[in-house]
Image (cartoon, rainbow, N blue to C red):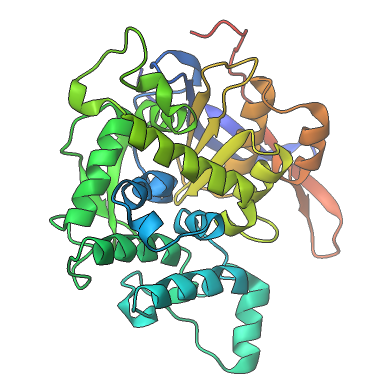
Length: 362
C-alpha cells in the first residue's frame, strides 16, 4: 500500500474544519499477523525515542544491571523521555555516581527541561540546565553503565562501532525479526537512530510484551535461529516492561505526559513510548482479547504533536483495549479542547478515522 496517508485527525473551530493531519496506524501480533491497520503498514519511519526500551535490553543481558544494582525506578528512567524533574535527574545522577562518572560524561547535549516547573525552579535558583536535564539522559547513562561493566571506553560510547551500540543493533534485530544492517541516522541526543517500517516497530513492541511468543520454546517458531529471542533475553525484556509499568512517572513525568498517563490508567496493561516527530509505539500485554499480546505503531505524517494523542486513544478505544472509565480519564488526550485567550472552548482536536476492526484481524 502506498500513496497519500489517510486523514486521521481534524482540527475544528466550531463547525469549521481548519486543519487536518494524516498518518498511519498498524496493530500486529507477535507472530506478525496484522490485526488492524489504516494507511501504509510498510511506511518507513525513524524510530527516535520509541526504541529506548529495546536499547536497554543489553544492559541486563551483559550483567551490568545486576552488577550495579539497578533498581526498577532507575531502569525506568533509562527507558525514559523524561521531564527533567528532580526525581529524574536525581536517579540519573545516582547512577552516574555509582559508576564513577558525572554529568560531563553524558554526550546527549543539554536542553531546557520539559517540565516548566523544573525549568522555572532552575531559572529562579540561577542554575543553568545541563545534559542531565536532557530527556535522554537516562538512556545515555544506561549506555555508559554497560560500557563501564564491559571495561570499554566511555569516550566514544555513541560510535556505531562501539560494542555497546553493536549490542543494541543485535537486540533490535531480534525484536523486529530483521537482520542488520539498518539504515541509520543521528538522533537529537547524538545516539544512533534507525529506520524501520511501521509494522516492524509494531512487531518489536508485540515481542516486548510477549517475548516468549518468538522464543526457542514456542512450538513451530519460525525465522532464522540468530533472531530467536532466548530465555535470558525474555527475562530481561519482562524486567524492562515491569519497570516501566510500575514506575510510569519515571518514563515521562508527574503530569501531562501521555506515556505516563496511559500506563497509570491502564494499571500496567500497556507499555507506551513516545518518539519525536509524532512516532509512537504501544505494547498491549497478553489479555483475554489479545492472548498473545499486541504491538501498535503510530506515525503522523507532518510530525504534529497535537495529533498523536487523539489517534492513540481512539485506536485503543476501537480495539477495545480501554474501557469507558479509562477513556474518561484520558479525555484531555482523546479530544483535546481548543481554547482562546479568554479560556473559552472554541474548538476541538477530533479523531476521524475508522480502523475497521471487527475482532478478526486482517
